[in-house]
Amino acid sequence: MPHFVLLCVDKPDSLDLRMATREAHLAFARGYGPSIKVGGPILSESGDMAGSLLILEADDIAEARKFNAEDPYTKAGLWERVEIRPFRATVGQL
Image (tube, rainbow, N blue to C red; front, side):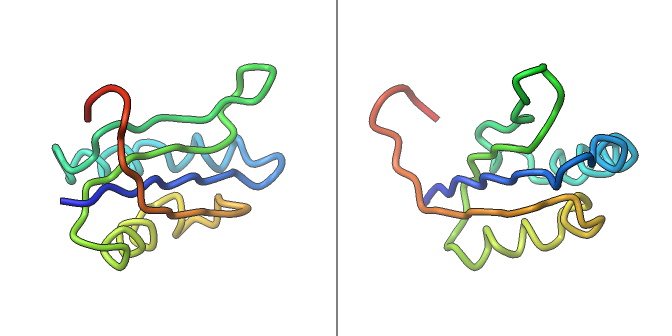
């Protein structure tokens, strides 16, 4: 099954929104079980959460986009920008 990278960058000064929505986001992500190969926050230079990176196993890019659209972070308006790209691991394992 194909993999997709989701690179999501938070809007400036949105840490409070991220924290207020975090538990709903994590519960949503847990619902995808082993389809999420790796995921976690991108950090600012000062160590604060400033975005998210996910590698998602999905049937196609439409399914990856649907995942993003249903994410509580997306619904809350957290992202400044989102990139969703097909991904193939050549080093390491997923």
